[in-house]
Amino acid sequence: MKILYSCLSRSWGGMEMYTLTCMHQLIDRGHEVHLLAFPDSKLFEEAKERKLTVFPIKASGYFHPAEIVGLKILLQKNRYELIHTQASKDLWVLVPALRISGSQIPLYLTKQVGSFIVKKDALHRWIYNRVTRIFAISRVIQKNLADTTPVNPARIELLHNAIDTAHFNPAHTDGRALRKEFAIGDNEILIGMLARFSKGKGHEEMIEAAGILNQKHSGVKYLIVGEASKGEDDYAEGIKKLARDVKLENMIFTGFRKDVRTVLAALDIFVFPSHNEAFGIALAEALSMGVPSVCSNSDGILDIAVDGVTSLLFQVKDGRNLAEKISRLISDQPMRTRLSEASRRRAVEHFDLKVLTERVLEFYHKDIRS
Image (cartoon, rainbow, N blue to C red; front, side):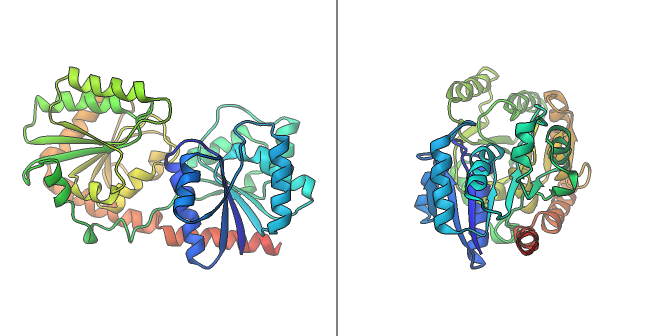
């Protein structure tokens, strides 16, 4: 098939990275896949670096007549068999271009982020009626779509974001070099959090919990992996200052790292304290690596983590409750082992990239034929 992917986001996070992951899966299966991306965005530059075919579309809002006409020409020239976007705002360029070109090819949307705005007016009906099918990445997103958009629920499918469980495999990854890099002793408990520095990711609760845990446990270190999102450097510096104020000398801020698998392999406990998460790729990757986790009991996290089976859940935004749950895992090695084994099983059974890619392809073939 000849497929056009779209993600006009200017950020660089889970949605943008997952766009490239999906494209590579389809390309590896012999399909030709092109990308629409915002020029000079991190996604655009990364796609070019990977030698993918990427077209610039400078559309960040809702009304872009010149870009719509340009896209119409691109669609007519390349004769794609379907379009799949990872960002709902892209529909405001894609749908008009499809309509004025007269193209009837299927249009898919993967809904990655929820909305609190009800969009059931005539204009939104005109936009969403052109969408063939919507993939909701979690149950909370599935419900949000039904509540806020004019889409027939029959066209909404629950389809989790996926991970490469063969790549994120603890049997094939060694974290000892990373522990050595940061002077983590073999007998020390390493607790890690992987998230960009953005409000709502739970860094404040992580720091509060670490301060409490340091009064109770020795031989514990913390690894905070991630960088600031665009325009949030001040927030990131504020988090680091908060850690200094609490005198968390055993908390290490690594900045951005590409070797996520190695980081996870080095951890004894993974913490995912996000306030509201549509899904949580980093958490699914931690499960796949068999890392026992402590997670907030909110939103799409509940599609991934199972309390007492793969993880311990704590009350969202409650740093003291987070500390209590982490403390339980620090003190209970058999529980960590049990959660580790169950985490790996759940990731392979529910979030495997190859399995979920095949499911997407089944929808593609079904809708093209119809």
